Length: 517
Image 1 (cartoon, rainbow, N blue to C red):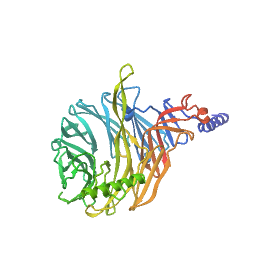
Image 2: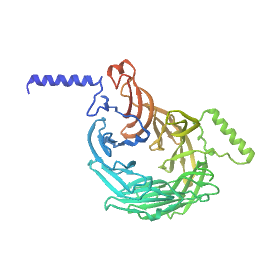
Image 3: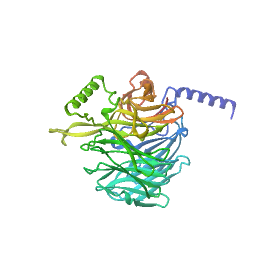
């Protein structure tokens, strides 16, 4: 190569790098937009309620992240794309599954990621296994049960546990990916019972299933624990007190191998919760205690509300106490996290939420309204606030505090708050409306209140018109990943100059952003 040629190539690279600061770079697909600052990438994608699972993201710490997508060109094709910490694609693999099956859940066990695909009334399941180190991609086809309604999925050491319902019977299927065998766990066959939660115990190599009763007068719940081989190795019965019906529960094994179960309870007449309970057990599974804490006894449970509403609740409590001699019952829906052990205390976080519905007029085939009737359409779940509690010995509550959740609505019920435990403090973090918000609590004292960091935009003049979904996760060092669906507008001179998408300068995107926090 001549000196002149080298000089021309160098000038070309210099000009290209300068120009890339001002323009979008389009790669192999025209639906991919790349921001040069390596803080955000976008994929042109319209949000659809029935298709929102077609893009899945899995953070892989310093290795980067994995983006899983369903191909829009070939049915049943799923693409696994690896990106580094600079948001640059490093490799890509794909696999074909039965296109009639639907993605249900994913679960990571060690370096293996598992994706489950099922279909109601089909006796065939498929599981994709992707190794995040070797990038080996495998497909496992499993014969299951017809009319199986999926409810939960966990994997431990190549043993897959899938919970579901057939008719009125709850059950657990066990798939061994090594010997390709499927079996129904006999100890899981329960009528008029519901599998409320699944917890993985990596220390004891067990999977814990919390089973609650749908029978009117059965107020207890049961924890059944299975080995990797699918054998029932432990059973724990949590006994209620008085009229308190246990409606949810999560089991945790403490450092001394004793167990505690924490969940919600009601008065038995409603599925809404009246409060939180905590139950402790000896090594032989003997119930040592159970404590009940109604929401009205919390010091800060309603502090997220405006002052006037707080005063109305206080007046209602006083009036109920004076007239009937007992406390008022205020009911909520709570999504309970797994408890965390901090020093000699247990920290529990629970998120309050409610379902959203809208009424729309019924329209006939000609586009005319049908009388005065309307349809009720489910819009998603609105999260309002998170309550954090600290429990000491024998289940006594040390303190409680509240973190207000703003502008978060999701189609699926999932945890919004992410927890980060330090030696003597707890940080609660969530993403909403273009920001990552956080609150840090030390004991019961708030040391950082409602701090927020802006999620990077592709251009400074971009304006978020609507956020359809947003998720965040801790990534590595001081970085978070934020991703979801947004509708963005850019009508400024800058936007027009860069020709972002079309003449209207509006775009629907699935974005991935790197946030330094």
